[in-house]
Image (tube, rainbow, N blue to C red):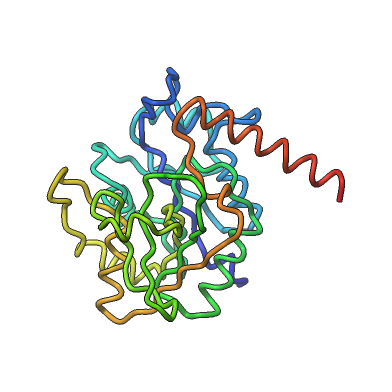
Length: 253
């Protein structure tokens, strides 16, 4: 079995996406001729991931009828945070893999090459968790990646909980993870509800695993655009322009 074939992909696709100003569930909003989430599904399968499951909620039946039988579906009745979404997969019957990729469902610029690098680095390092990061020139509400002076990961902190010094950090975490499956489901229950809104953040598992002295690898990539989530019509326009730039660059090389 290849490295990729030991891996199942899970895409968090339960949100309504109100800011998209669309009557469609957010995963089905059109981007470059197909639903946003389909781009991510295609990239996962192009990297030879064995199976993909969608965590669905709002408009679940419409998502299922549109995307079809190429993926499995796991229902999230209430949207109580990213960790809560992953918890819905605890009893998923197709967990027969060593690793589980967990991606958000609104970042369609992610490439199969980057996914392959993520899987390869995770397996090479024998990590409990590996996640993608990048230095962002944009101000975005993502978690900050905090390292010590030698570059070693210290913690990840959500924007709303970050200190002014941490808010100045440009290296961001965008919820593109790969986990050792057994470790993920062992420690998911240790995540506590946020004191402000009661949500369960998957980001919090990083600190839990660090305290257990398990290996966590932040894998920084150069192309931050691959990791940007699309939340508004303006974001769709930006991403479409980025695709055109990439296409032109490929034609000239």
